[in-house]
Image (cartoon, rainbow, N blue to C red; front, side):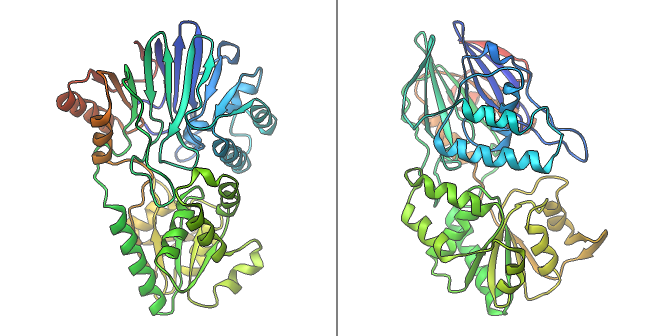
Length: 421
């Protein structure tokens, strides 16, 4: 078994790994990394679709799925993912193409071709392709999100994709019942960071929401459309929050996808009650009317880079009774990061000071340092390990610490690196 890094080694974005199982080629993820400050998007190394036996998508986030349509520009291949991953990938890639017109080497026809070649697979369903078998296991990261177990000629590779080992209020914990493995490719996003326990973050968010309601304000929660928006709604519902909760933007389409796949949720009843008790905003004219009383507004985009969040930010930022709760990761150069660091927002070409109270809360969908090491501790066998999908310092440090603690042969690879198992 030969493995090659196509992208996303010591960076977060454009994931891609090519696994050659004695002539059977499996592509694990094929994502996109968005350009910073006007620079173009970046992609993994190009692969010819005719050279592939299967593309395997771990989950729908664009850094893992966003470049798969490029394989359908001049050819095609079979694409495997769970049913929710296909539904969400189609939604997110479609949205990316709408926002970034002509920025990518493919468009809607290629996305449609990708969906025509979609092969839906459930967790623990073993698929045989040539000289290899593979199966998906629950990753705890997003609905339908998977890790991948590949077997060929007596060797086993385990690729984490993105993981949240403990799961969340929405999702069951990661499935690590995988037996002995020979090679591990693990994400390293928060390998340097220990996050606050989820229960503490939830309690702090509820307290902040109640404070804003007590002063008759509106709490705005800009939030990722996939998972985070729904998780926040469930947290408020579970705390018997008495005020109105508004949901807007692409989160509403994601809600519909989640209702289609209840078997992938930790507790479908909690999810259903939370979403059905919220007020869905589908027309612009409803927005102002919905905010005539104290309420919570949950709307993408999580980093305030677009979507209906921009409208709410401009409406709610300049009243000191209001609050803004940042519950998503805030990337460098984004309006959310700017708000957090400077307390300012840009509106009509001017930078203005925000009067609303701004707080950040930790709700990451990724495993932190403690969870990652708990996962490594539970791995059986004596695998070689690659640490990927983090900044270079996180990947290098994680590799070093794994080797020191567990004795595994561990390496933080670069693009184009190869290994034979």
